[in-house]
Image 1 (cartoon, one colour):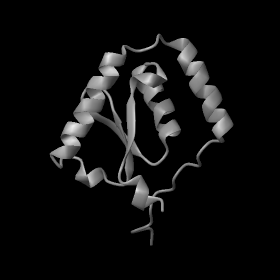
Image 2 (tube, rainbow, N blue to C red):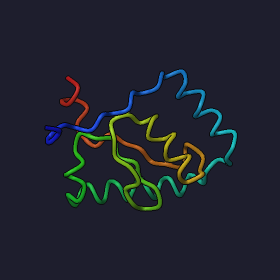
Image 3 (cartoon, rainbow, N blue to C red):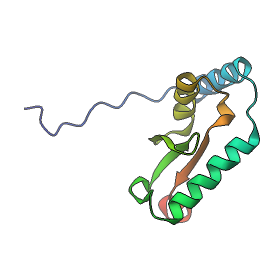
Image 4 (cartoon, rainbow, N blue to C red):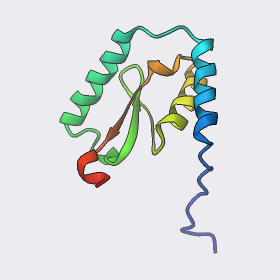
Length: 106
């Protein structure tokens, strides 16, 4: 029986490898307009305040162009994937842990 068996989660790459890949992606793309990132930040906090993101509590949320672009557990893995998918500089995406770091990690 394979029912109710969770899908295998790919292993998280070594942090040094992620850092090197992010540095390479930074060199491939121009730095983003910080105003676009700030608009995405504002969109996230407005949506969170309205309760629209409650189902994402406890996850890292990536916002790009005023929408949730990805949800996951590891910010750098998500950032690399988003850079590849959208062909953007790593700093273009607003990523934030949607939870309470004071209680979630205590």
